[in-house]
Length: 339
Image (cartoon, rainbow, N blue to C red; front, side, top):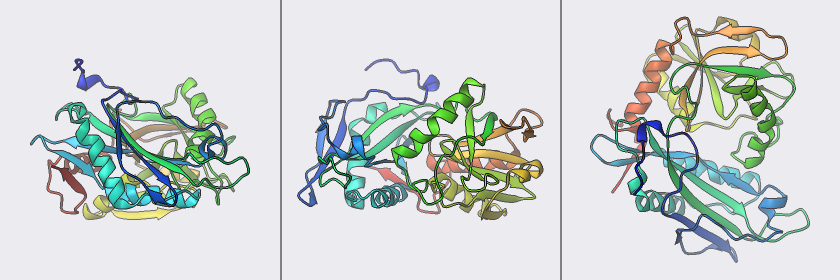
């Protein structure tokens, strides 16, 4: 095995030994297959290529101090990919099959699960695509579900240090009654132009506003937005936001820590009064936001006085991380230890 500098891993693709696959044909799922190839053969008229029949998930496996490998709330990922499949009319992956394939992919690539103490984890990418042939606009009759994995470091190069983000008005991530609430590739394709421009202009990510009125915050690029004010955890509520499993967990932990939780529309004007702000999701867990700049006006909002993450964001981050790595008791039944 090649030497891996676990402490300096980027967040990106990493070749491992195996992936697992399963085909849906003739109205049923087939046998789980193990492959060492990174390539899939696909018909040129497959619906995933023409009509966007595609959905995916992002998960992580963590190696604790005890050497055991843990999955975090995989049932919620299984539920969400079924919701995504329903949204773009694909065959739904049963929960049992989802877990069988995820756990098999992790176990068969166990040597790539980073050791405890390096701030790294094994990223897991379940992927569902329409492989059936269609030229007219209609759903496929055949699908491929596959899972591949790879070790990753922090999503943002800054790690848990505050980042600067940019609010944009000239791009929308998703329409109010569109696909923003499910995890399909088209949402991300639609965000690329604004995101890449923001990076070129020196920002870690972009914050999208809701498409209808352009008054309220929707998503922080590839993550959910949250803020802290007066001992309250505030996060946007919108029909076009992807429900983040990390955000769901943070809301519960915030309540248990004595914070009030508000899931509601969050106006851009409110940013002035927030004490802390952050983006949360599987990839970043929490990425604290130090500054937000409105691209259209140049107006700035600041959330870090000393260049560090705020105390409540730090406490939430550490609490969630401790549960994921087995450092604290899992009183919620969120963690599954792989035998």
